[in-house]
Image (tube, rainbow, N blue to C red; front, side, top):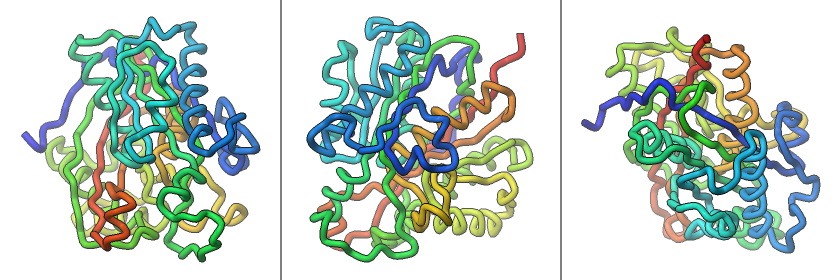
Length: 334
């Protein structure tokens, strides 16, 4: 059963998506795609943590407003973030009168939330669900690399935590379809460098994609895009090389949300973007609209997460990682 590909009902689809991002993200190559941005990264709040919560509120409200929904139209919320005990989500979504499921999947949280929401909708337990996640560069830095002001040198393999939040409303409809999913298995290959999360997460992405190809009989040629979030340039290179060792040449079809969101040369984000918000905002405002317009037809998205904590890093533990896969397809023709 660990290799079972979940198939959702044909009508399980995205009803609406919303996104909110900070200054660097708005200045990136796809910055004009995002719904809301704030050049101060504070979103009117006094702390970075409150700013992250506010981004979640804004992103979900943005998604709901696009289809005229209120909180009473949504049956359940699946949400999580990088902060300890996922307080960004619990405070940010506190005022929504919607049953709440808290998640921790690190950077894979968007994929995990979409997968669980799709399961509930496809099975008929709920009519409409929302999946919401976020990260904030300064709240993450405060948690993992206190104090922020100490000016530590960033290594070339380090990634930049995205300031952003993505919200997805999932139900039965004729939007971009969520057709399949394959839950990830926790993988740990001895990487204990918190400044090289791409290397820690790449094996989990490989494990999931290899299991999917082996079970489905498909290959990279069957898809328009194989997208990870977020391995960055370092992890993405490892991912492609090791998949080739397994006999799958994915390089021509591959991209990563952490590589899409920033300009490598002008923004100098080293190995690219990371954080729960990275894949969430790229998916919500760049990839899903491309599928909706028919510019992409069939996409495999693997949300990857480094399942570490401040304590595990301080104690020198190796970093476990996860890779959840969902298959996205353009709307069916009328």
